[in-house]
Amino acid sequence: MLRNIRALPAALLVAVVLLVAVAGGATAAKMITGKQIKNGTVTTKDVKNNNLTGKDVRDGTLAGGDVKDNSLTGADVANGSVSAADLAADAKNEVRFVDGADVSLPTCTDTGLGDCFPIAAVSLTKGTWLVTATATLNNTLGVKPSELNRCGLAGVTTLFAEAQTPLAAEGTPGESETIAFTHVVNSATSTGVALKCTEMAGENLQVNSPTLTAVKIS
Image (cartoon, rainbow, N blue to C red):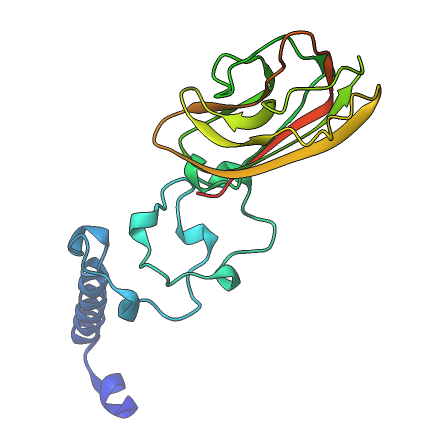
């Protein structure tokens, strides 16, 4: 074959070389680009396994709709590469904590707690929250407290959880008890939750270390 090529006249040999060059150029010109691919037609079968890297995805362009449900796992994400800023607001496991001041309860005879002073309060966005409240009640005056006294977790218009104050009502100065409430709050809009307690006329109950903790579940 080599002898045959060498035997060709110079002009014919040039023509053959040009023909090969033109054919190669035509092949290069026909390379497939993004313009020749119909949107939405490339599937996972068209991509070599373990071949795409972060350089192949433009920053900030990949959305949940671009990935098949349940197809990506933690193994596909570099450790430490996802931060809170990468998560949607409703996907964050948000925690809110309020450490209230020690207060003397003002008189409030509303056993429904709606009109009573909020000892500690927390604002919640829409969603499902696990709310926990704790406080210590002290009978500083030593007057026997009413058996109608109660504390509870209350929303703007709803009493979530309530119980009678657990004081033994012995009328002893310094008598104290710790109370605790836990409730799951579901709200379609932003709302507030407060810890409230009643106090009847002539009493003087002190509330120490009131706290509210809210953990967003979903």
